[in-house]
Structure formats: C-alpha cells, structure tokens
Length: 109
Image 1 (tube, rainbow, N blue to C red):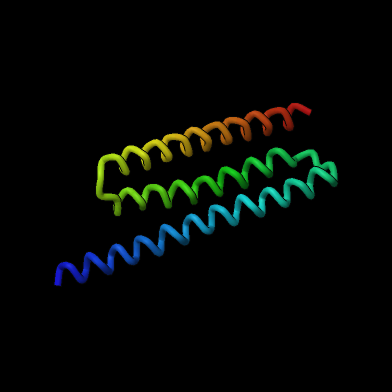
Image 2 (cartoon, rainbow, N blue to C red):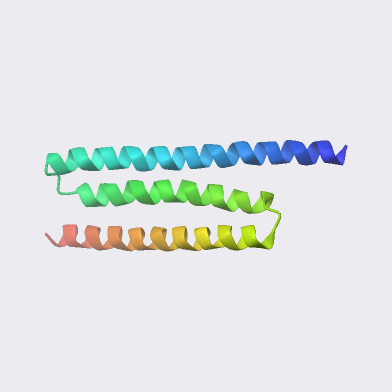
C-alpha cells in the first residue's frame, strides 16, 4: 500500500517538474521574441521587460529544480542539482539587480 502512494507521489512530482520547466522555457522564449520586437520598435523599456520575463522564467525553472531534489537517489545527483540551483539563484538575483538599476535610471530621466 505504501509503495503505491510512493509511486503516485513520484508520478505527481515528475508531472509537476515537467510543467514547471515547460512554463519556464515558454516564458523565456516569449520574452525573447517580445524583446526582439520591442528592440525593433525602439521601445525604451526593452531591457527592463526582457529582464522581467527572464527572471520569471528562471523562477519557474528553479521551482522544477527544487522538485527534482525530492526524486534523486545519489549524493552526486544532489550536488549537481544544488549547483544548478545556486547558478539559477545567482542569475535571478543578478537580473533583479539589473531591473532595479534600469528602473532607477528610467525614473531619473
């Protein structure tokens, strides 16, 4: 009985991981396409909007990576996933900092 619940939980987690990663990739692709269109239109907020979309996409991807930690079995996999999580957190912090800087520059003008 316990094994059945464990299998059901793993199936649910794998579905959630795929959903989070799909959403993150889709958001990043859409943000990139919109960024190119805004760049062509010479929109002043292009970099801010692109960074916002990338940050949102990275947040979804980070959620998927966190869920992956539940399903891994070896320490080597744990180290790999933790390394990915640290890199994605660093990218998210960097993009938030860049967005804040961009917004401050925009307010000064």
